[in-house]
Length: 314
Image 1 (cartoon, one colour):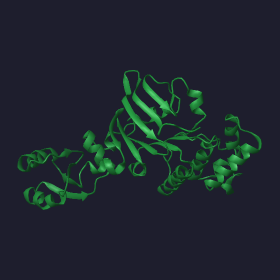
Image 2: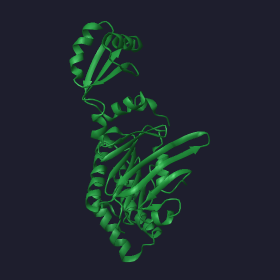
Image 3: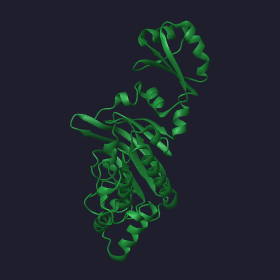
Image 4: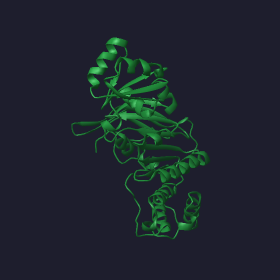
């Protein structure tokens, strides 16, 4: 299927509620063909609801979603045939062998015989699982099981791959390997990849990210673009009484600070020049100062006034 549009996904004014709680509130974004697009946010921010709508598990309440230039409300079955999905919760039968898991999934796509076997062997080979084909899934590490999940999602040769927190529970090395496979997949197949995550370092690997908080879009752009909006340097000033210190800095130096859990944060170009001034002025009130380059958490702080994990709920 050749796409005329340069976008594989278009979302306009998407809203969704669980009773009185609004999980998504007017979400709008577009995903380009061949792009790795991330949804970053704390738990409860709206990532999983977005995932469930885009993967056709939830129906649209308000707003419009187009995937491959087809309306998601009226072309769900056609869209599903062009989509691969990896869920946050494992979806493998651990008592079955790797090959058997993929074989059963392939039959759900209407595949069989030589074509199905060819796709199974090809996907497992590309994901470095060729020597584990006949192992029971329960004998594999968490990282290898995640690769099997990915191989299963690729059986129908999707144009769009959607993954919900796919590296949750993986150690850093396994997470790194999983991402290498995603990037190789995008490069070789030019498919669009949508991924939800609450890992800041993982979001940094996306081409663009949408930062969600309480169902709203608080920032959208490449990681570099978003961090450059914060300022060139970030100061964190630790104190026993951040509220009082915040007022003094504002009064004395006309510098506004974000007051967070145990520290004040200043985003400013050449912020390092203020370290000695602040220490001299408030030596009895400052316990320590740290200086760093902006991170995606700093973007979240600037946009919401809260720390990223501080706003997390299960």
